[in-house]
Image (cartoon, rainbow, N blue to C red; front, side, top):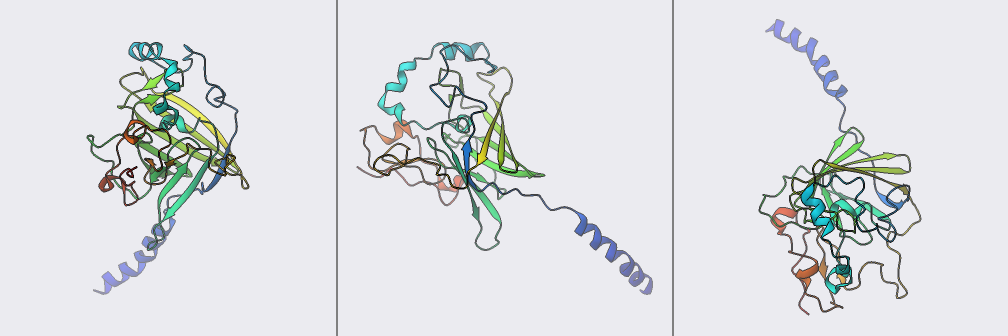
Length: 278
């Protein structure tokens, strides 16, 4: 018994020191408004690319046929004029980005990051270790995103995306696409690296980078003459990443432009309600 006590007294400090020396996951504060810096992606942040220009996008034969079959006049349709940008396009769209943290009120741990864009939906990135929903769950414009830390870099994995455009000239990805993003902060600069994999319309992963600069005094969504946000009027984009329509101003049914509401069982307590009756 005495020998066991000696061993315990000898090795307990070593075990304690070893436990304390194991680094906790490093976390970077991404909160704030990040202003776009058009060092890249000028096509996406201006009038859009010319028809037929798919440079840099690894389209396979089916993807090129899909892009070449694109009818650019679809952008004049009322149901497409307020169509939100999809997850893989959001970072490269016009406007600033606001990132905020959701903190558990009991444990004081980071449970989610909320990313808001000018012409897209509020996108939650869940940090609480929840699993992705089953394959048959509804797909949405922003998809379902979970994050984890690798050093000071946030790695985000997104599934359940609706198929949409990679460029506004018809280059597209399918609803079988998955996305991995790496968010890294260097002082007041934010770098986003996106890797999109699509077995349907891409012959290899599509990699893009985007940069932002912290803007302490900036507003992410410029107000219009009536003081309203620059986002589409009549649309309430709060909730678990999938918008819902308030006062409809175009006469277009909600399910045409915004898709299915997310079941709260998969997407958390703050999932959107059913569309309001008109």
